[in-house]
Length: 442
Image 1 (cartoon, one colour):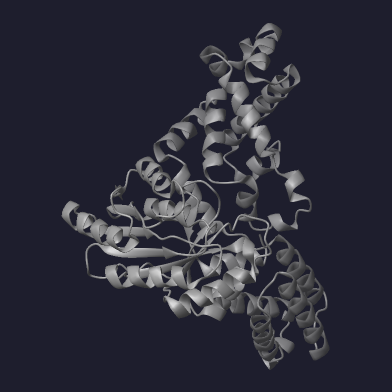
Image 2 (image 1 turned 180 degrees about the horizontal axis):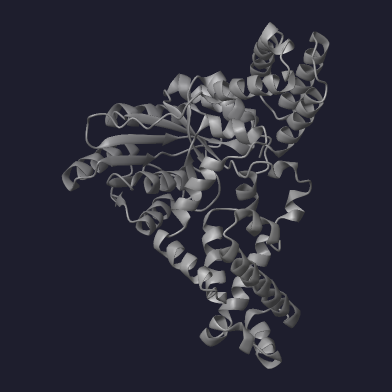
């Protein structure tokens, strides 16, 4: 989402770092470029003005202008100011002392409220018993959609087909949650294509009935400053405690995420990074600021890896590599684990320095190729996966036919696998990470 902004900021900082000592003219020139970059990223113009003026005040101080690394000092100031702009620190969900705690999701139609309700339920279900309820009696199949997803993530669900009043549905859901021992009730409210009195009156009525501990505004990052303006209205008319920003993996310019906290005065608590049920993350302002400046996000990468990779399987794999027993089955399983972490573009964006590689999309392995690779390995027999040396010409034709690929694709996979196995054998002997990176065939 922030690729263009990241590229432009890095170009600006590159010029600053290359100048040695800085003067007021240098700083003003850089700030003009930063201002243009932020406006092009669709950041609110008032936020941009305050942001650049604050940086100007700090960057023109004696500590920066007389520093032996003034360019680095300016980058440090921009980084710190970005963190402030995004909310300084993570904001946790407030559950309160009452059980069940009630969380209301509000937002316009199409912003992703229903899928976000499911994602949030999944995230919170690690520590608490969750019940989902749909207060959307207008959208066809809204209740059925939420019920199907609830079963998938194994959380509670309430429905009453005889009731058509959203307020009564929510009241009955909370009574049922108390009776069955649920700790949190998440209410998926109805949306409209635009804000109207009828929708706001309904939300206020539900709020008065259930007394939510949190009202979270679900904002679509793809709608830019419209998401900010709509959020202001929701906050004025209903009251909002925080924001969940959806579609942060899209190709929007990112201005809404950088403007929301400053304009609404409410923290972003979670961000949606894809369509999968697992693709909801706690929002960390410092990590996003670091990524915007092209410095990567190692902590998020480690957390994704810890969640996606099985610890016992990882230890087992390490033993296999040491014994040079890394098979095509192991290769396929590792590809599946990597896919669980999200898109390759997102993963590579978390690695410090990767933004400096031009045409990163071309440099990275194609996700379609990974799917093709898994299909080819799945078309092999168990014997073939355990010993690739028995795969002769006849077997290659059968595997290609079974996977819907070509013999050339099968040949390429076997060649890559052989190189990786050879490299892993070398790495296990030398025990050097530098050796691994130097010999990696991609």
